[in-house]
Amino acid sequence: MELGISGAQRRVDVCVCTFRRPSVVDLLASLAQQQLPATLAMRVIVADNDETPSARETVHRAFADFRIDGVYLHAPARNISIARNACLDAATAPLIAFIDDDEVARADWLACLIAERDASEADIVFGKVNAAYAEDSPGWMRRADLHSTPAPFRGGEIDGGYTCNVLMRRETVADLRFDPAFGRTGGEDTTFFSVLKRKGAKLGYTARAIVTEPVTPTRSSLKWLTTRAYRSGQTYGLVRLRDGDSRLKVVASSLVKMVWCHAATALTLWSPAKWRKNAVRASLHAGVMGAAIGRAPVELYGAVNG
Image (cartoon, rainbow, N blue to C red; front, side, top):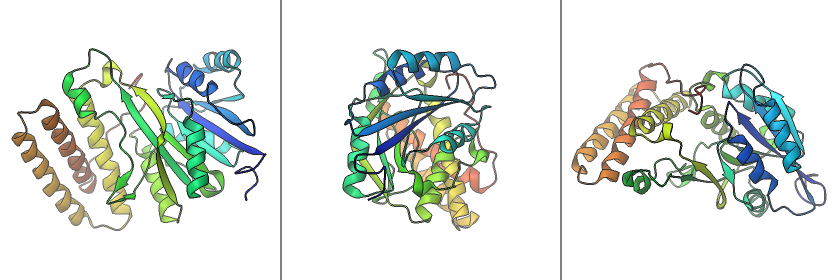
């Protein structure tokens, strides 16, 4: 057994990257309420990605108010990969978790991630991310539930991954870091876990480790969903090219899927939820094709409350 992974000396560093979001206080409050065994020591690392250390006072106050063993880092600026890498550099525990600054963790979140890691002996375990919609959200939005993060499965196996709910062994990560080239567009986590998978890391998933992400007004639109889907498609397309697929193959396959999704959109106009789901899917495949033909990635990160 690895020292710190199991037994009486277990330690875990929970990493949070933040950028001008007051919601980080709600997240820290939920981390303070984690139901953990006495044998597990949790430390929280918060990396502030703003140009100035705008979150310093807020985070330190939350550490004190909630009695959290925490570390604040200033990791400028407006590039999420820089903040994530600062967390990895500061982490010393054998286990490292990542969670987003606009999420709230259920009280058994971390315990469930660790339990799944123990049971499966996986190097990396992803959890479930549920969207929380406002009471006045449109009905189609609730039914389509496009804001929740889907489980990272493709073709029956885990493919890629995300940092909004994950636990990983620091030994598995080693000296790998998030690519700053994706730090403003997003997709830095997809490429990061893609590399780890190629290196032989064992990936796992549990639906019991739940975090909730409130859907803000700025995200409550079809335009935001299609833009995010297009960016995700660009990332997936770049990963396919890096893994050896030809540009022609990527363009051809994504074009066929995009046309199919547009047809499905037209055929499901009777359902407000279904046609929007198909439209978002079409945007994802358009992003894949865009990556293959060299279109510049869409920059989503760095906007306040984006």
